[in-house]
Length: 353
Image (cartoon, rainbow, N blue to C red; front, top):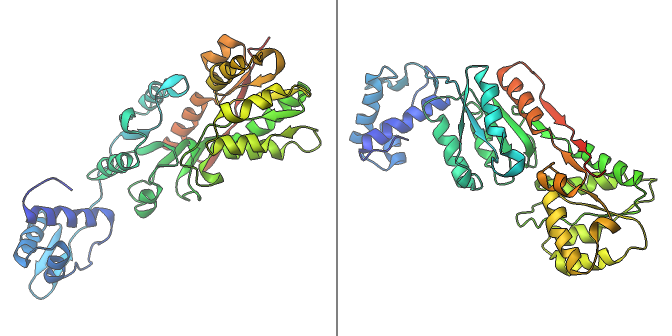
């Protein structure tokens, strides 16, 4: 609502919100002034002043015996802005905002981005969504579906967020039927990981997970989903996945505590998948060095996200095709692509010659 110190303005703006949301439609009767006074914790005179303000705008009709009737429905004006909510820092997503802007420009649209410093805060995202849709209706939304995203806000008011595309990832227990999705295909990645390690003669896969303090179940964790996809593809390969290592590190066990013993065991060819190139090239590599182990000599390594770390250290890695995801998402947003859900498989990038 608009900030004001006048109580009747607060009443007027809240009732206006009801009309915008479709809670009360043309021809329908509002609650009595007495009921509204009780709802807003003000007196009837204040309610009357607020409703009379909307009547003066020809939105309401007020008569002593009829009560207050909605005279005409109102809708939020459609703008050419697009709410753009995604990570934009680091080597993976740094260029997505600029590329998104280029794609939207072709359609006369422009992104309104949330400050990256508050993107990780649930209440800030909720406030952003509310402010973006309070008076106007954006052309649509392109949003990364993190575990802390306020999904219930979209479910409660579908009219506000009708043209919403989730990109890269989605972390709710159930999909929202009227939203659409362009996501990284981690099922395909799991199959590709097994194929890669099998071709290298690997018999054991280590996946040291990053600790997830907000883990709530498989649906909340891409790492957990990927681990299950890897295991689904191990049948008849003779390859063993180290569940104990993955589950312990996902739950917070330090790599220093559990990983060195695995690295010292070189009785069978072992492959190590790192959730990011950085974890392999820097963190796991440094841990190996501290324990007198040559990571690059003794293990088959596979990274993720195709960053300079992989290129500089000669580690094969996955590219999640961020620009392809953005292109499909903008096509969905503008109606050029009418699919409900698209899974984009990663590309295997080979730097290890």
